[in-house]
Image (tube, rainbow, N blue to C red; front, side, top):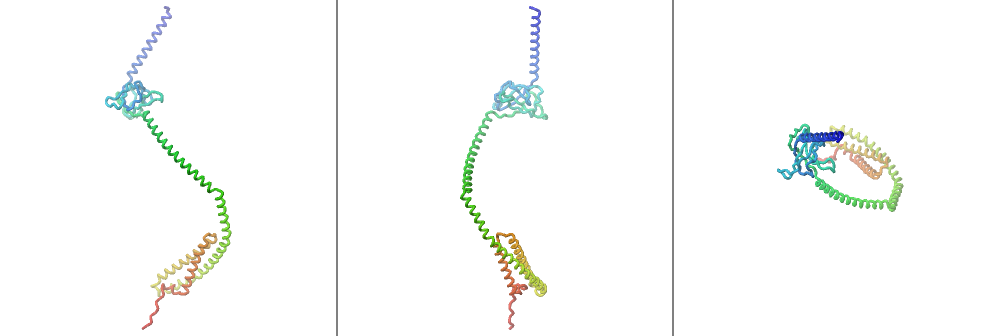
Length: 321
């Protein structure tokens, strides 16, 4: 055998020994750098030994065993080997998860909080149940049933709304048809003709009301001095008619209020006439009634002027016996 071949064989054997040593040392270090932990779940979801253990999304170990809990067969006991120094704490939560949809399940442990106490080796990591595929399917079925019921209800409501819309369109078609248009045009034409006929009469009534208002102002002006004289008479006779002073003043006040109301009414009538109010007939009737009341008051004052001083007529004097 040549020297070159011997050297090559020696180099290959040396490299194999070196690689084997490195692998052995690495495995020993890795096995010695892991500590055991446990957690419990109600649903394992196909988890098997060798599955990854993630802490905050970082791989820190593997699942070593998956079995029923001897103390409680309704839950699954999961043993884990976690890299020594991993800051598992009392607020860390383990749950079943997966990195992607198509990958095998893993144990995912949350980071917890920095203030929480660290879990000792061999401790139990608190767990949280994940939603299983069966639960998800049941929820999808329930949602689908609810959606089907909702769609049926919406379909029914849409059918009713469609029927109402068709009826509304039909009613609008009937209202906007040619016969109704002709009828509306006829009504408008009759209204124009009626306004044309009534307009001269309204102007004439307005002139008469204006004239009546002027005469009423004159009457009120004549009554004013009479009221002043009555007030002076009351003042002069205050000593002799003390017993009837207050009723008399009340009556005079009411008469003055009546006259002021009449003046206000006449002013309103004038304003209504200027603006050509549509209720001219009612105003004329009210004015006529006010004028009649004023005439009655004038006649009453002329026939019984003592009523301004006394409330009732004094009794007849008795014939002495």
